[in-house]
Image 1 (spheres, helix red, strand yellow):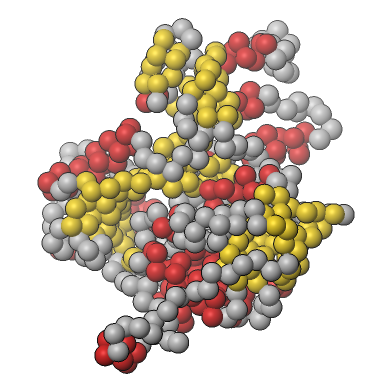
Image 2: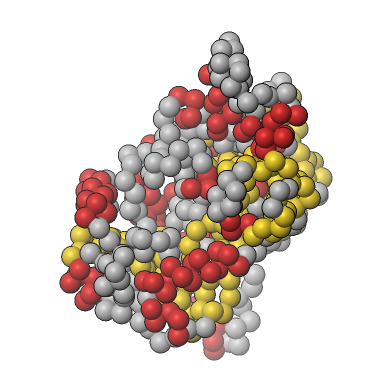
Length: 416
Length: 103
């Protein structure tokens, strides 16, 4: 049954007895046409679009823990379409357009809030780069506005404008960017997929692939063998571990990224601000907490926890941009495992094993990509051809020389 | 994290920068038939294990030596620290100086 204002009134009058669970707790069947490994945002979105847009038949999502317990529940909830390169920007613009219609599509309140993202600039060179990126965004159908320092001052008067080393010179404003209630994205896709017949199977860890003659036949799991026509892997930080079971080495390193939230404060940051002189960005949640984050820790890690050196680094950056931050108390910090790729851009591709497909390498930008990654991965699974906006995300692009290096860092994952 | 430097004793990991998997010591032979494929794999593919991992750390804020640190990527526990030059020599790699930079 759908959610609506009318339904809410009806349920309120009848003691809220009619709501029921949002998805079934499915048990694994013997065989599926499509098995998606990973019940995070991307995996659930893939199953949803496969069922809804591409008429996928029997579909299962396998999740080793509970759905939405990984990075979709650990991010800083930002959505945006403000990339420079041709391989990226059409994809992220497609994603933002899907975000804009997401709640109606899912019949689910994901609290999509297009509150605007401001990338600050601190030098002439940075302003030139921002202008160039803004033009690239506009060419791809996104929006961008270059603000001078007065424009920034009007929006955020409390920033540290006259820092001797990194004075604020302006910013690139992307008004359609914003934030989304992250958990609701996982739940909304799960409910939407479930209503279209997808089996969401939790506590079901994949322990191996059955591969014969270069073709995948199914997956071994902690709940028994499951036959599969096609298998899509969408497991973010665990990508290397899962794909190693199929004998593959990936252009990926796993790193821990931390994020933080302060105690609840009265509203004072209406949008999202990113610092141009240090790796720091901040927004304020609807509950009032300041949500902010910074760099990855920089060494391989599968520990989903925070570490003090980066806490110090992030808070220092934050204080140098928003001196008032020092008056707020830190409520929580947490860590998630990022699948850092070799050029900072993701992969949505077939593998050399027939019937085995891979979606990963999202670095710390996977959340905003959720709808389009799901859509494009579903497109690939169904048609065996990449979606138009995702055709640059090939696994072999380092061999062919087509890397998509937004920051120009080279194959050094901890620098992206 | 504390890295127990073989020459300087225990040092804060903040003094170091991180490069990656210690397999990066073993540069492929550029004269080999499959050099293109080997360099692609060397530069871009990683084992990326959850568990014990041998990795290269550079003591940038210290004596500027390269270390091979054996560390658990799940617990961050460090079990072994060696000088990278010792590791390279033990694996049969010379400094390259005497062989015309071939190694």
